[in-house]
Image (cartoon, rainbow, N blue to C red; front, side, top):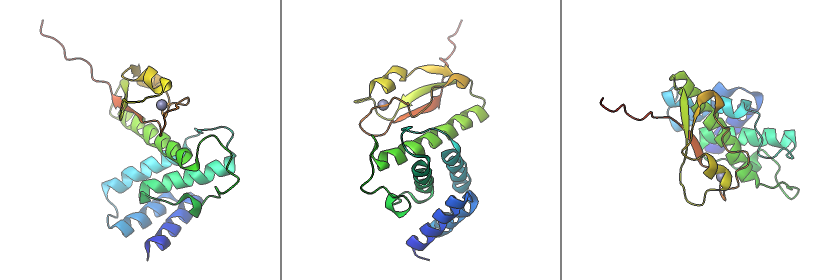
Length: 182
Ligand SMILES: [Zn+2]
């Protein structure tokens, strides 16, 4: 099977909602079927497909649903041509490019998954970090380095993020300062 054929089958499985099949086609193609990474990827993809965040409420649900599939496929295939499954030609009229919308949908699933992992590990508090601190927009700057109870974690990507590229904020477990000797 060529990459294009395998990708097409994997996308078709994602459109049907069959995440396991989509994953196993991708990992057989990449030679890592059944690995731990596959399970981790499946969990991330479920968050991408199931969260109800939208980077722009003006985007029609059917358009968003297609870009969500692209975002999910990116987890399995790294690079996916949006034009393969979504019509984003001439008529695109939204504030973010289709590429940025896809990035943000991906990012949202990734962070929701990260938050779930921290919850599973028993973290009570999370902290917001950014992959870079240069040129952060006001929305990202305002939460940077702050810690929150995990149940009150601000949503990531920041809904009002206006960073030039995609919001790069992420959750990490909050490290309590070491207890000093009495
Ligand atoms: Zn930002």
